[in-house]
Length: 246
Image (cartoon, rainbow, N blue to C red):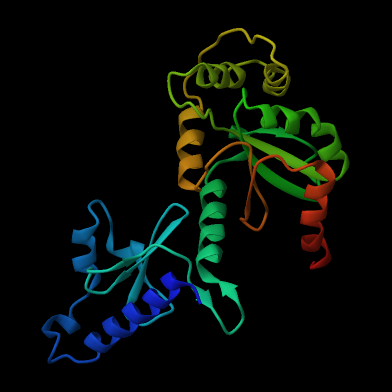
């Protein structure tokens, strides 16, 4: 058993014991989340949900999940497992969060390659100057051929005011975004253009919320996220179980 999981279990037991004894805990009848909100500036009561272990609350920001004791004294940064079925409950929560965040973006604000009725749709956070992002896009026809529809969101890794950021804006503001994105990934110069609103800042912040650590990052239909380039055939194989389960 992992050390952090053992700590989580012990902290949960201690908190549960305190809550079960009103005499030892005069504030037991009050909502413990009120104290937690004070510990996390800018948080809200509804952001703290009871965890599967009594006495612990789950606090999620984007796809980041933290567990805190009801008194706000201890925090656990690690995954929570249900040993009865070997389920990673934290990862499940992260997948749900990613899907909800991405669902908030209408497809009209993405650059999409592939037919609407493809067998699978994946969402890829991309940097126009990233070598492996370019490799992935160079095989976009093969992904589509294998039934994989690719929805791109922008994630210029160097952040605002960078060359990649300006390129992303220019691609979005082009009259033909798909063509402009393809040419940019080939290293061609895209005519500088600006338009407002454009989704680059929103996409970049969304990438941070879903827990992005690099590009490309492929978010699957189940909310799982694959870091880095994945060859078309391998990605199709990874998606295949979802088809069989239907």
